[in-house]
Length: 145
Image (cartoon, rainbow, N blue to C red; front, side, top):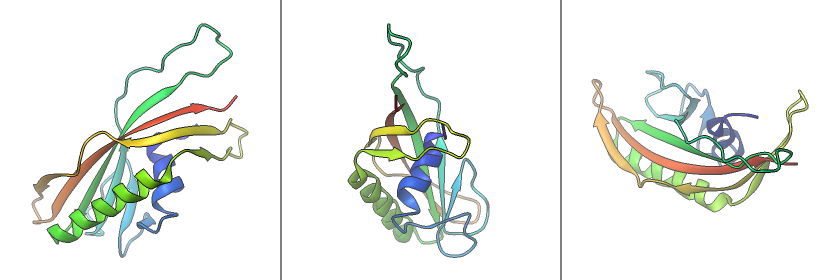
């Protein structure tokens, strides 16, 4: 099973044209890192989440609810906010989806939905005067059985 950040990047953001994974020009999208370049950067992090709920029938895979934080950075504050809004629209419009099995034969993952946990918030201007906005999403998923 991939991390929720990985699933968001490769199942929603990249296919929606939000940016390019590890792109060095335009909007670069990164998982669990925020490099200094490119200036236009989207960083997607899997955050600490509560443990999965256990069912009495141990043959059923537990439901997981994970928090994903997305940071959007640009030298232009309006551009960064606009891109964060584009991210929100792409994620909210996706609905339920399945993450394909990996080559190692792991089970598919059913994502029930991705929901806004916090609105877009201005975090800071970094030491290079680049605006950083942040937003959180709750990812509800479980392994398919």
